[in-house]
Length: 573
Image 1 (cartoon, helix red, strand yellow):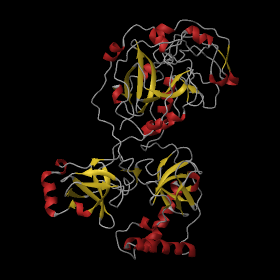
Image 2 (image 1 turned 45 degrees about the horizontal axis):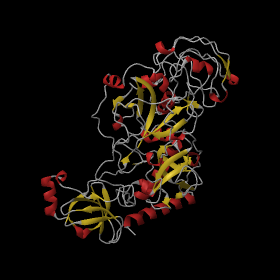
Image 3 (image 1 turned 135 degrees about the horizontal axis):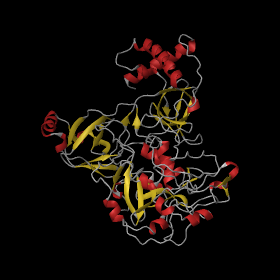
Image 4 (image 1 turned 90 degrees about the vertical axis):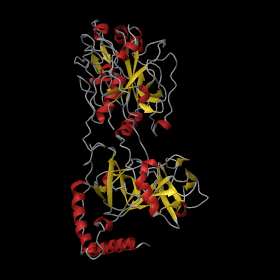
C-alpha cells in the first residue's frame, strides 16, 4: 500500500475516533430540500416556463391549452380570435381581430372572418368553438371555426432549397432514437397554407444571412473542471447508476461523508462525485447549502489537527470520508453522464516517441484488445506510470496501455520534441472509438482540455424527448397537455433561460442562421414551402428531429424530411 494512502487512512481513523469519543463532536443537521433548485448547467438561473407572446402560457394542469388573443409583434397563434374562458373545460368565443401568423401564417392572408362561435368544449386540451377568422399553422378559417384539427390529402411537390439529410453533428442520444415513419401524404400542420403561398424557397433563402463558417461543435471524451459545490451525506447511503432507487448501486458512503454536486437534475436527484464513485443521489439524503458549509468548516478544523502532525502538501479534504465505488468505472453507465469533474485534469505530461510500430492496449496485458496503433516515431504522452512496467498513455484521441520498453523517453528525444515542436509529430491511429474503449477513463487526466460543449444541448434534447407521445394542440404551449410546433420549442427553450418569439416565422430569424447540414443537436430547423415558413423542429442529431408534428401524430421523432431551408443556432458553445 502506498505511503500516502496509509497516511490518509490513519488520519480518517483518528478523526473518526475523535468524533465517536466526543473529543470532536459533529452536530446533527437538517437537510435542505431544494435549495439548489433553479440552477442551470452554466451557473445561471433557469427561467421558469416561459409565457408565450403576448398571452401567458396555461398552467400544466389546466385542461384548456389554447393560446389565443395574440396581437403583439410576435403574434399569437389565434390572432385574438378566441377570448375563451378555460374554466370548467368550456369557453365562449368572442369576435376575432386580424390574424397573426403562426408558423408561416400571414395576418393579411388569414384574418378577416369574424367568428361568433358557440361555447367551446375544451375537454382534453382541444378547442372546438369560438374561433374566428384567423389561421394558425396553416388552418383555414373554415377549418378553425369547425374545430377540425386535421387537414386531408396533402402532398409535397416542392424541392428542398438547402442540403438536408444526416448532418455532420450527432449525439449519443440520437443513436437510440426510433423515428416515426410518417405517411408520404401526411404533412406538418401549416403545410396546406404554405402550398397556397406565392413565392419560392430560393428567394426566401437569398433574403437571409446564413453563416457557413462557424467553428465545428466538438464533443470529445475528455472531462472539464468545474467549481466545487460541497455536500455531505446525512447518513450512510448509496449512490445509484440511474435516477431510480431501483437501479444498480455504484457506490456507498458513510454518514457525514463528502460529495461534490455536479448537476442538479431538478427532479429530486443530484449527480455527484465522491472518491472514485460517480452517480445519482436523492437531494433529501444530503446536507447542502449553508449547513454543508458549516459542517465543512468544522471538519476542516478537526482535520487540521491531524495534518499538522503529518507531511505538508496534503489537502485537509484527504481526511474526509469519501464514497467507495462498488462498480468499476468502465461498467458504470453514470460515470460519464456529464463529463465534468471537480478535479484538475489537464496536466503537463512527459512526451515520448514510439521506438517501432506497436499497439496501445485496452488492458495491461499483451493479449488484450488493441485500441490504437502506433508507427515508429509517433508522439505519445505518458499520463500515468502503471504497474509491471506498463504505462497509461495518450496519443491523439487514443488512450490505453503500452509497455514502457516500447517508448523512447531519453533526454535526446525530449530535446528533439522541444526543437521540432509537438505539433510536427504524428499520433496513434484509432482502432476502436473512445466510447468502446473501457480504458478511456483509467485516469481523467489529459494533456488537452475537454471540448467546450454546452451541456444545455443534451439537457434540452432530453427534455424534448421526454415529451414524445404527448398531443399536438393548435395554439398550445404545454409540453404535457399539448403544443403546436412553435409553442413546443418556445417552451422548451424557455425552461433553460432562452426567450423565443411565439411563431415559427419569427423564431427563424433568432440566433445565428446556418445551413441545415451544419445543425447540431439542440439547434432548430425550419421548413418552408413556396417561400413560406410553416414549421419548426428541434434537431436531435444523426439526421433525426423531435417536433410537434400534427394533430394526427402529436409530438414525435422522425427523420429529417423535405422542405428544410435553414437551421438556427441559439445555444452558444
